Amino acid sequence: MQKKQNNNSLSFSESVNRMVDRAISAIGLDPGVANAIKTCQTLVQVKFPVQIRDKIEIFTGWRAVHSTHRLPAKGGIRYAPIVNQDEVEALAALMTYKCAIVDVPFGGSKGGLVIDPSKYTRDELQTITRRFARELIRRGVLSPATNVPAPDMGTGEREMAWIADTYKHLHPEDINYAACVTGKPVAHGGIRGRVEATGRGVVYCMREFFRHPNDIKSAGLDGGLGGKRIVLQGLGNVGYHTGVLLDEEDEAKIVAIIEKDGALINENGLPVEKVRQYITENKTIKGFPDATYVKDGKRVLEMECDILIPAAMEAQITKENAENIKTKLIIEAANGPITFEADEILRKKPITILPDAFVNAGGVTVSYFEWIRNLSHIRFGRMEKRFDELRGQHMITAIESLTQQSAPDWIRDEIIRGADELDLVRSGLDDTMRLAYREISAARNENVKIKDFRTAAYVVAINKIARSYLDIGVY
Ligand code: GLU
Image (cartoon, rainbow, N blue to C red; front, top):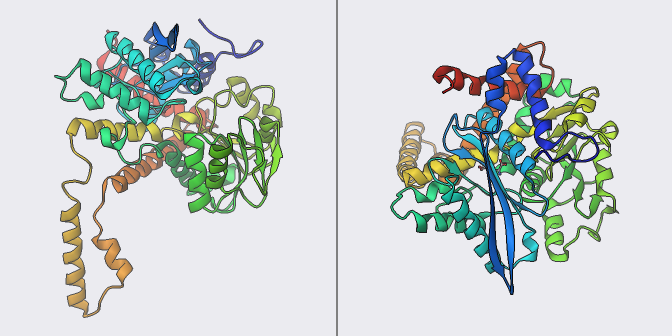
């Protein structure tokens, strides 16, 4: 079933495939291998009844496994009233490319459940989630070795804890049960820094972009991230953490925030933390002080700015509004915010796009760290933190006795401090995003047929995936 987005538009999965086709033709990949890479391998659909208050409701969900050239297959589970099979398949494909781009050794998968979580109580959601998890486990698409879900839109730590607990009860003999899902609360085997990981990854990727003078220049920009005028769409998990980090650490100006029920504009910059607090308290963005409210939020995507960050849903920039986009740089923090047709229009404009499969890969990168933590059954840094601190202490003592001077407190603190789990997660994430950016940027510069970052990113991904098919053959 290929659901079309709207009149004569490509479906989400067709849109992803068409973008991937550009990379396939740029490297002249064998059509057989190309098809093997593009095909979604497994699709499980489940329908299950749950008694909600006095009546029985039937829920529909999917788990798509796009690729298994690496195992486990990895990807979030989305809870949304409009989720559909094509969307889940498209998102699973994006997971395949995403993992390859950032060298996370996983295949690609994605799940979805048709549900409006706001209509159910916590207990009801727990019953539904546990039942959904049992259905997925029974069908072989949820286990530490083969298929590992994570949070996505509409799900978070709480749902992941329920899923892990359900798996544990069904497989108490599996010593690695905690690795059956990532994005768990820290007290239940989660890793520090996972909740903010996607947003932080987005910011690391932006910082890396601004370390490449040629890329900055080709985007028609200059200078660094500081002072840039940014329009941010979505204050969910990804948009919120991206916005807070940009706002607090990079002195970039978030001049507009777009949410479901409208947008806020303030040329002097919007305080992301306060806006989010306002939304939590008032259930709307409307009425936030010191900002102009615009009812038709989507129009604000068309506002003139340096950087546009769509961090909400897929298909926000389509052939209907692409012509009006006036930014210089688009950072795709959401999955699939630009349709293929819109991308074709934007390519003809002086607009640089850093693509989703790279930009938002921070989430799955830290999921990978969590999975490894679960398999090793030990928190990162636990063995070496104090040892490193002692070594730092000895170093300071040696320097002070040799120079007969005492080190300033801040230098002493920096040298003595051993890395804890959060330090290591952030350092691993930063390194991952930087290396991936460099690979993509190099691919773009090396091949004259590649002009844009999206095609370059897919070339990087496809070369790696094709290698693994060609090395072992297709059986
Ligand atoms: N749902 C997130 C994504 O789209 C995270 C996936 C994961 O951590 O497995 O990338």
